[in-house]
Image (cartoon, rainbow, N blue to C red; front, side, top):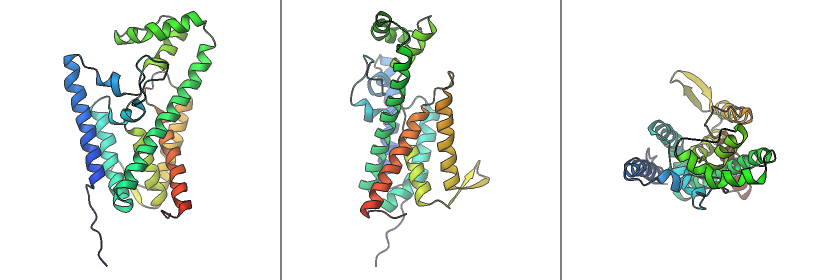
Length: 244
């Protein structure tokens, strides 16, 4: 029997790291030439004039800054390499894309719920003005003075970006497949993976429900990646494709 060697940089993980890095470099380079890749590829709410269907996928290759990119890519490598070595590249990529897409759908649904709730408090003329003019205001670092209109404008026209939804899906998979392995918080405190993953899931739920106005983290996208991860893993287990 030939034993397959464990790769610390398997093919799909490597290419995902490269693609995310290239997207970040292109965004940073082209913005000085007046080309806004964030506007083109980040996920906008469907009411926004900047929404495009491809953003459901492309948003997971966009990042706000280097710190955002670094931590997502480090987590992708740290946990993704084990999953790809165990599953193979095709299944790993399928899981990654589906959890990233699931994160986008859950996020859009949650934001739409907020939009529906808030828009019931304004008239149709104001709503149409937000749709038609709100994006231009935000592009000039401005917003509506009315707090309800201003919040609604942010919900509709501020995009979501990042690989975090898919990365949370990877964390969920690692926690379910290796529940008793140890993660060292701050490189010193050992925590079993099942408790770590459960903890970050609960924290994402609490933070999302809390809806802190100063919080720009898409917590429900994180939850979406984990939810779709559970569904996909259970489906594969039922088919007998994986075991845990």
